[in-house]
Length: 398
View 1 (tube, rainbow, N blue to C red):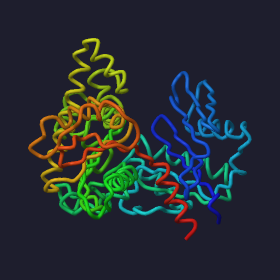
View 2 (view 1 turned 90 degrees about the vertical axis):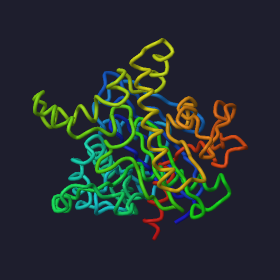
View 3 (view 1 turned 135 degrees about the vertical axis):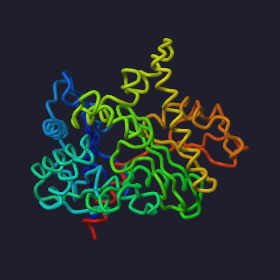
View 4 (view 1 turned 180 degrees about the horizontal axis):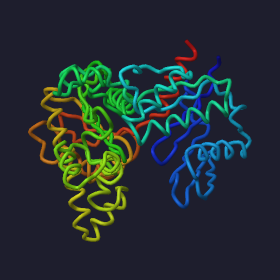
């Protein structure tokens, strides 16, 4: 196999699909794009190709039709997928359960297991399965590789991974803390070490992946020792439509007194909580606009978001016994200077000092902490697609 080999990476989310054709060795993305607003009245497919941006707007019924439209758009610019030198299709799979913690070739058994795990990640695994099925139809002779979000957190120490419930029930039903966004946390932690000119095995760090889904991780010498998401992606930080930590008694109360069914509660927790539940919007830019307009619900949503974030940063500082770096990544982490500022405000006693000018300005990988800060505060754009491409290429080349 040559250095010109490519990997098609499909990151099929709850209402959108990111895709890239990547040269895993160089890291160059030959083509990339996004299918968004799936199932809404007006969807959109965007393709970046040779410096140009192509766009198609129209209703996208489901993930299957979205992926097919993306393939058609790539073919329309003279690069049909079967002729793109693709050696593997790498798929981001959110939940791998206890069985999957390494990049895995997908066969019928593996696909069935991933589908079975949909109960643990109902917003994501069903979409992930569709991505695999469509890719198998489109590229039947190309290996499909599943890369699991939970894999990086397979190393969690048992005290961090264990829920304090009846041990026999936990063992029978596989109940433990799995963690998610692992591909991003691993990639960003490795890049953060490079920015500092050190090895991942030389530093302790906190990574804050803040997007529509959000999670934090504590990483000691390159090994994940704690993370905010747990058995499912519902635990931990406040997110776009998920509220993170909640007293389980609230759910029992809603069942007993409000007559809510399991499906009702599932919809509440996954789709009608978090920023959306508190303010009516889940896009952080829209939230900021509402705050500027004096919307008190939006302000409270922001304050709850930052409060929870600071709570976990403090916990991980203690758990790690101090850190060398704190790194922000993903859409909110990379773009919302106010969140970075407020999350780390008044932490000088821990050696954490943000430089306001660096925080407000700049792009790409950068240090935003003051020269006097003993803890490096970084912004590192995540690139889950490149990490998946490299994992997939390593597997099929081995």
